[in-house]
Image 1: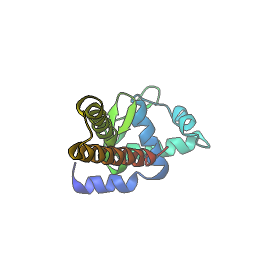
Image 2: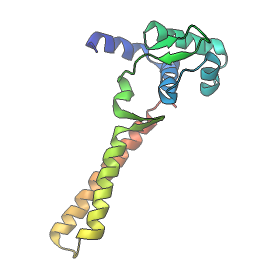
Image 3: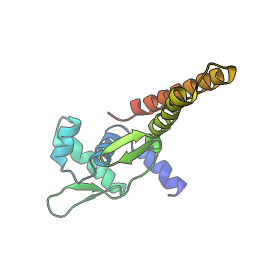
Image 4: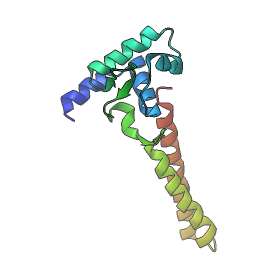
Length: 148
């Protein structure tokens, strides 16, 4: 993706349009105007339609000829989406995987490999704990930045 297009999308995807894009990405299936309106608790379907049309103008969604459902044309990794990974319908912070990996190996070391309490084991224990806490904190911060 070109840098200018990326900046344009980053500028255009704000507020409610961002939330509409997020719900379409999260659901992974075509949605009607009414479904988007209900999912995001917009005051009326016209608000949802306005933002869906805005996304269509940006060529991020496609409106089907029959039924009028909107579906994602492409996924863009802009803004906070750079920090998320999609697994099916789940959008998880990238740091979540780092945190799980680091914490798992930290606990495995602590349970199976640490036999006595030496200076080296104290260092590994403290270092592993600090790294795990940092990854969990970053995963939590990214999770709080999602639109809703």
